[in-house]
Length: 273
Image (cartoon, rainbow, N blue to C red; front, side, top):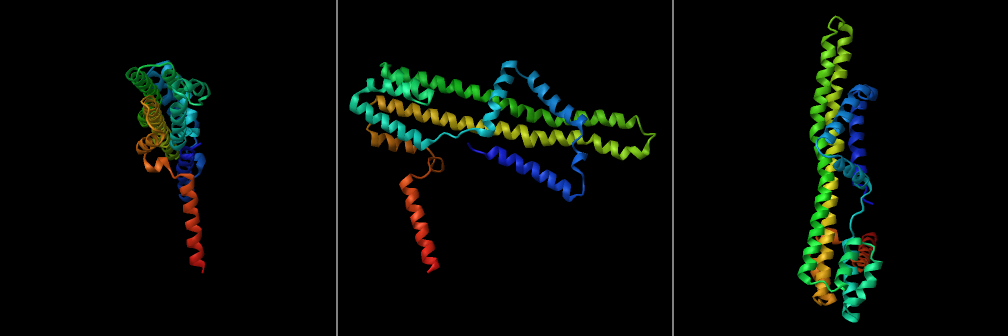
């Protein structure tokens, strides 16, 4: 689980409420039901109206992954593909059929099954690329839906403010209440901006980033499987796949991590001495 979204949102709202406290304002002054209803429900409503019911359902189902989305483990994927390459060189491609049934990644399982079935290399690449393209398009529906809400929310907030100011103009005969009413009117604009920049746009960007990582992982699997079909040597396959992954995503090998820790301990000891 990568908690980046949860941490970021907590810090953002924490900063806003800290500002309210430092300004001497009350949190209850912005937690007004009427403006929040028009902003949140109105924004979601126009978001639904801008697409199809299927788009909305897909976006809602994708929402949990924005908070608990698991990042693909590139090094583990490469290790698995190298292991499969060794099996194929030793026992042949038919031996991958059992590996296909045991694969935890459905995409890898289908690719291995096609490989074991003797599918032609060009046809296999085309099939896998089509599946990757379809997955990318499906993921795009979800992250675009939330990004669309981020575009609507500020305008919906302004609509709420205009509605409230209309009510203010109807009560000019009550000067003692005008200050409070005008302040309450602008709460809708506030929540429009806050919901767009603190909720909808970050969630949309998060889902887009998770989609990019998923597509990269699927592409890595595709290239690995095709290399296995071509009879690539495990060592060369590992080098090829590692070259496809950025260093910060690939991370360090366990042996490298232990060596780094040992060097760090040695440096600390020298400094203490």
